Amino acid sequence: MQVLVQLCERDDNPNVRVNAVKLLYCLVEDGDEGTILEHVGQKCLETLLRIIQSSNLEEEIASSMGIISNLPEKPQITQWLLDAGALPVISRILPDSKQNDPHKNVLVENAAGAMRRFTVPTNPEWQKKVAEAGIIPVLVQLLDFGTTMTKKCAAISLARFSESSLELSRSIPKRKGFWCFSVPPETGCVIHGGICAVESSFCLVEADAVEPLVRVLRDPDPATCEASLDALLTLIEGVKLQNGGKVLAQANAIQPIVGFLSSSSPILQEKALNTLERIFRLPELKQKYGPSAQMPLVDLTLRGNSSMKSLSARILAHLNVLHDQSSYF
Picture 1 (spheres, rainbow, N blue to C red):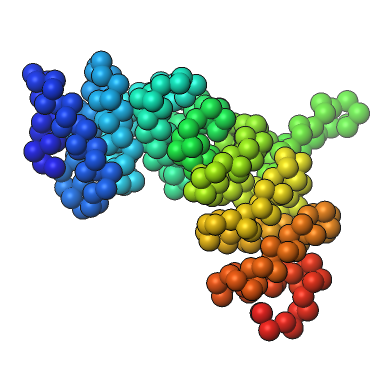
Picture 2 (cartoon, one colour):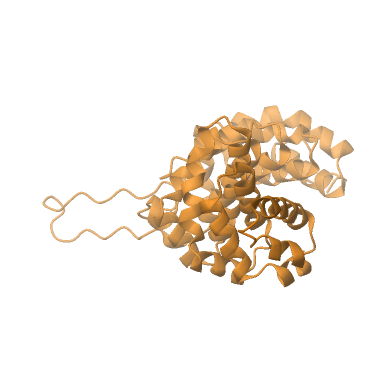
């Protein structure tokens, strides 16, 4: 890996450089984190960004972006990338998702993967930089036009943004003076209650991301469905359950979630169970969607693992199908 990093800097021999970049991409994709961190430093990142901007070979550009995408999500690496001007470079690539070109598709996939590192909710400043660069609407577009991998990466980033929304939503100003002469109050966000905007609070509702995320729930890849479901679940966390449940119902999200009870992916099944356990606390949603969930839930109480059996039985008790004292608890 050390030799390959050095060969990536060989501007005097393009053939050597392009093959070094492609091989380094393979090693980073499946490599040990400690080894990667030992050899891929600030200078290497600057070299990769220079290749992305100057190379005429799509494969070399895609591989360089792939290395960045697969680097460990360490704060130091992300800061180096920001300092080297990576954000505008990645931003210019993402809108190319509508092109029907295999190399372009891989490049956009890798760019969407690289963008994830700037959206971690533990660093609001990075999130703010990404939002102000106009990336959130682009991520929403990727949910419809990107490849399966691109959709997955976009959904992960949107979920991370949404985790910060409640805290960033502005309180609605109180009305002053005589009400009949005052300006009508601003309407609060249906999820977060305050004043939301795409660039300031990263709100999924304001970004019109809910329905595209729901469409991704029908993707054949379970991991992509999981990423989309995680993003939608940020809308029903804690006190947001009542309003968030209504938003999901209006976007026709609940039936696909019920369908995940029969998925071949245990992770997706478990996430669906946890989601429905919360959603079915709302009487109107329990009444509307509970009947279609009963048979898959019964099947999970018989064939699921121990945690699935217990949770399925709890939901069935909530639906008045099983008694609260059932042996499944």
